[in-house]
Length: 291
Image (cartoon, rainbow, N blue to C red; front, side, top):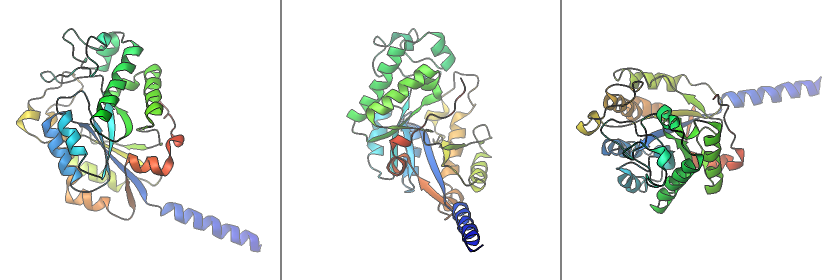
């Protein structure tokens, strides 16, 4: 009876400790370097001092500015936003490795296709996909960035099991993790909310996360400037008035209420550099995916 009582007390203590363990929150900002308006918003996020992960788009025109920006802040964990699409009508980019090197990845004028369906409808060669993704990683490293992880713009780089295997191969080769390979749980629900409602929706999502695995907030920040407001998505599924949507996510992230809540003792802010140190790359596991 005595040992049974001790066991009950130990189990109760364990459950209590688990329920009171801070919830890991990982904020990942995407599309860094896409344009100047994104970079301006990024710096204001970095100045908050919170641990944050930021995924840079190497093929984009404002990559160089992003590099200098990211180097200045120790609170950022940098990832490569592996890019195989260029989705804006009048603002296009192409492969780092050169259109002639990867001809199955580009349209008739040498730009990436605006959607995954158009890209894979062109029967891209797996060897060319690997060449281009490797070139993006190498360019970032040669620019002096310390890289901790990989993820994927518009999910094109993980469209098929074969392309996902390429990403996994490169991650192993360069000793990087892949976003969502530490069993992170996506917190979403504001992407298609109206710009006016996004900040409150983001705050509500943070307030209502449940204990468990690391909670992943994927956020697209930007300023509603003439530069960004001129961009029009070439895909019918893309949100209209994109600059207002990104500005709203930026406002939601840096709002005093959201920032104050992030520092509540019930949460623990982490980035991918911290997870790499705490978990180790051997703990990576391919998430359950449906193709």
